[in-house]
Image 1 (cartoon, rainbow, N blue to C red):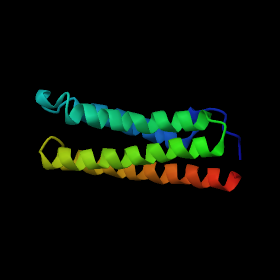
Image 2: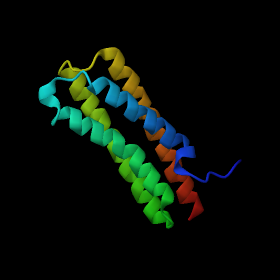
Image 3: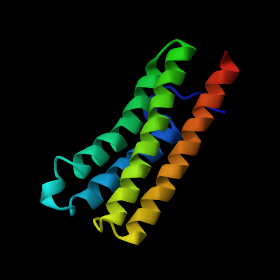
Length: 122
């Protein structure tokens, strides 16, 4: 197994980055009155997933790494909640909801793997 030297080499970060791009894509069509509401919240929650993974990767101490990965995992749940809300308000088509929700679940599983790997290093 090759050593990972940068956060952008992590599968969790790559998948989280793709999720952010997908979120930005679908929210472009959200109502303009939601620009500072659901649109902003959903985008910020999604972008915080990859940002926390990146920051956690760069932390030296195990506990710091895990804390940022846990924050990323929390942001996954926040994204999922906003996806449900967006769908139920009619802002998000069912097909887009399903795709993004499945992506978010995959990201969550990869983050759990990062946390387990760090726990094993303690």
